[in-house]
Image 1 (cartoon, rainbow, N blue to C red):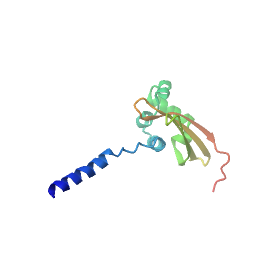
Image 2 (image 1 turned 60 degrees about the horizontal axis):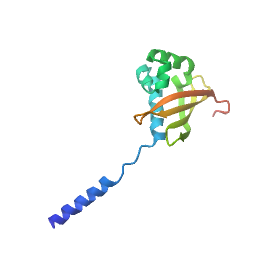
Image 3 (image 1 turned 180 degrees about the vertical axis):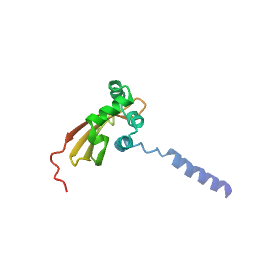
Image 4 (image 1 turned 120 degrees about the vertical axis):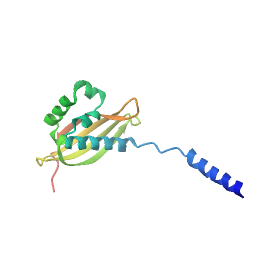
Length: 142
């Protein structure tokens, strides 16, 4: 009887081991990266915010201080949003590139739409490859 219990336990363990692990959802993964960068901006943590930038962005802004100054000047709604929420997302080429729409209410009361481009890196991780922000003129407010 003891041998039968051991065999049953071993079979049960093998079933769980043979079930493939669920691959991470790249849309969800990249959404968390964007949230983490926004959190870093809100804390004025240039080093952490810069760590999420793709190599192409780092080539244009090779220093975290220069990068941070550019974001403060040109991307104020992203740098210090009042509130934000994720809108639509789109995955291209089996997750090689992910676009996220982020709806932002600026601290000045203006509404913005930010489109984040996320690119998969050679190590399989994702980085922010660019952000385009446009005023949201369709917002009716609450």
